[in-house]
Length: 366
Image (cartoon, rainbow, N blue to C red; front, side, top):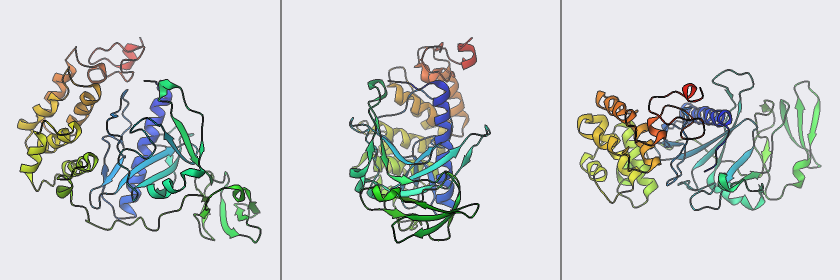
């Protein structure tokens, strides 16, 4: 597994967290959704070494309509996604359905303050992105240690200066005026292949480097939540592992357990996907911590896969009970546990990490 430099890794995690939070705010406040974290701690800038790879999950989930959302926050706004040909690691893998959404936004951390400034998200459906992949530009693959990933870029125009969009003239040039009132023309979009789209209406203003004015991806017609159209309990009875995980995650976070017997069956089913079973145990632990917290903590055993151990530890932090706190203390005291779970050092088991429980990064680095 390849690693980014520590400072870069921390910065990217923080940008992703504030981007996911901004997307959740807009979904809730402007479009009436009930967004929750689908990927645990998608909206927190916690630093970890490993991320669960068995199911590549979207960042957010609407508990009312079941919409899944992947947020992409970058210092330079663009319609760009990472992709790998490895099974399950494609740009649209992880359970992103045609109707689900990607949110692209610029994060400006140049001032050095936290949280950084986040521009208004730009939304595209998975279906629209898939329909235009033939016209994307692919970068050279990264090193094999980084998964041989490439970046896929959908052509678009993000003005570096602020101004007002006016329209398209007879010569097929985008006309806009800058903040000083000077008339400007953008004609390069005539070289784009595929269908072209404008994302602003005449008279709309845009901020420097913060708005996508035009691109080849069709914009969604509506982002409004249709209401409580998704039945999480019914989805839990389905055959798709990601859909069942979404269902039990929604049940766990909202604490709306209508069929506890069904949830108990999932939690105790040895043949169930481990992520689904773990989430079911977390949901039950919120109600009966004395019974279910030990089963959640058991997933952080020495013999468990590192990703499973880490997920169990993070899950325990969501249970507001003394039993969960005691379990976390017991886990932190296990010298034989994977360093990523037992050690508080943000370096994990990379060079410079002592791997001892309760040790801070500053102590590891001396």
